[in-house]
Image 1 (cartoon, helix red, strand yellow):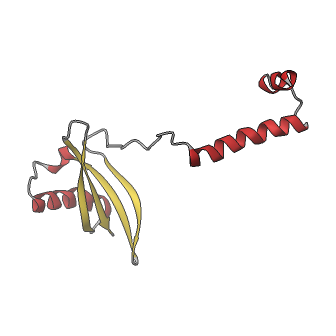
Image 2 (spheres, helix red, strand yellow; image 1 turned 45 degrees about the vertical axis):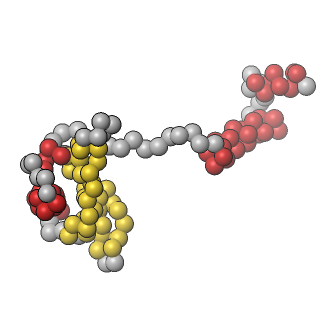
Image 3 (cartoon, rainbow, N blue to C red; image 1 turned 180 degrees about the vertical axis):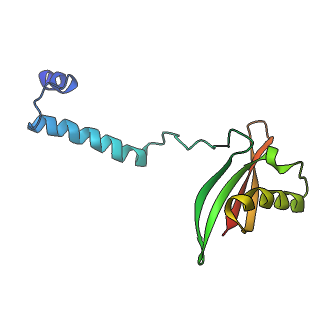
Length: 126
């Protein structure tokens, strides 16, 4: 039994043999089945545009017959907007030159670890 475990550990079996197939199956089973049972805590990192002139655009599904997009606009581009109406106008001022006339559905601030607003996520329908 020790010899069998040692040969599995050092991968000494020829390709196409029963033991080789068992090892490959075990590896594939581990890769595809363990994420369902073990939380590896791997989550996507929130991305924010690196330069002030960049706007990240992601597809966000459909709204009836229209396409919905998620735009991420850096707070630097908002030109000091503070009120809800100023923020909406600033978002549209940045988005409309990129994609034409759109309807702003909603927006939410994106904050860094210190709680400072670094960007805004805006859902628009085109």
